[in-house]
Length: 79
Image (cartoon, rainbow, N blue to C red; front, side, top):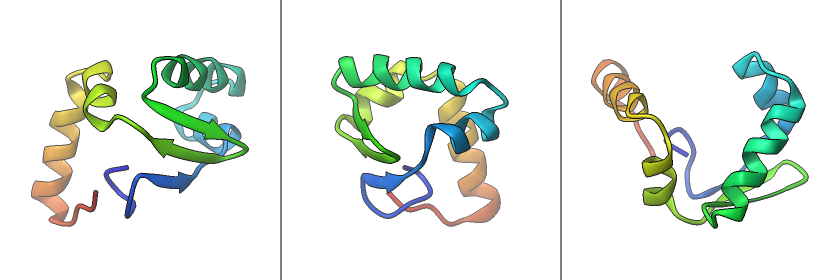
């Protein structure tokens, strides 16, 4: 969401698994957990962030560090 406009975007389980170096099934499990928690909806490659603050709270503290470093180095951030 930090790199796209808005809180809805397209991202398949397969592509996310490839980016993260994990099995597609692991992405499905994680997406299911986030959806059950009411943080996202995910259907056929379409992701919608429902609760950004909750999603950030569920993420490791490294998310804020990486986000801030990217902003400092690149200087472009949407969302």
